Image (tube, rainbow, N blue to C red; front, top):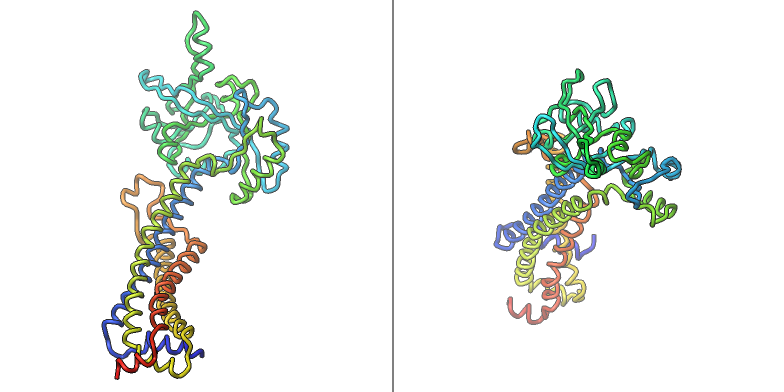
Length: 421
């Protein structure tokens, strides 16, 4: 074993008496361990929330969306469907229609709200049924039946306007949608009432609060009639075999499609402001919790400086025996590395252990869990984050040992022996 490592280990672990130096060193290790554990737990929880929100939104939003820049939409969607379906990693492609309309409750004339209406192919949105099932109310059924066309609304919107979904026997609330083309047509006619289209509420979905309050779903053909699209569609929604391939598919489509006629957006682009805020919160919390490790590193500076003062006679003797100043520095840098390794290792074990327990056993439940779709704090352990935390914490400990190491290497052998004589 290298003699420098043996000396560093002896200085750190070989003390038999409990002194102020050993207490400060222990506090430093504990601080590093707690800082690393706190970073791992907090980042894992924030990653869990991010993945939960992403999966929830992507269950309704596509992985990649091709949007027409023409306000009138796409006239020939079949050719675009064939083109997008031929791209690698694309599992399915379906057209959609989207626009704004006035949401009307026939029994409450004063209840009106502008909503975003999305017309979808009922067979292409199988994931949406799972989101509706989580609410336990209704089903994701927008197809036309003998009771008329169906509509699925957000749970918060249904609470605001007071509508209830059907249980399969046609007893659900009926609501109306009035589009901008319908209003324009009414204003240009001398006689006649607004052409309000009626829909039966079939189910409720629950996602982000801002999304639930202003989004509704109807069938694709009903949306085309509502917005007078005459067979046109707003764009194409793509589902991929791997969500992480969205940027790759976007780049491939941008190379094949004219940027003047089409825009290609990934799932991240569709909700970019929300995802950016969540990422900002994650790294902001990381920076704050990193201060725990920084404070522990300052303690390492103090404890190793005191070790240098206490061991100056040993340092002088080592130099007299021929040990170079560079190797003296390495001894104390190794001692800082040992403190960092022990503290970081203990923090990794503690943090990963707590995160794993929360992931599998849901030890910490969320307050007011009835207001959420989950009962306990979600956890997603990303080993890239764990690696960065471990490297930064260990690096700070080694960096903190640099000043004491330089001070130790500057000790004069004759003066050190003379002062302790």
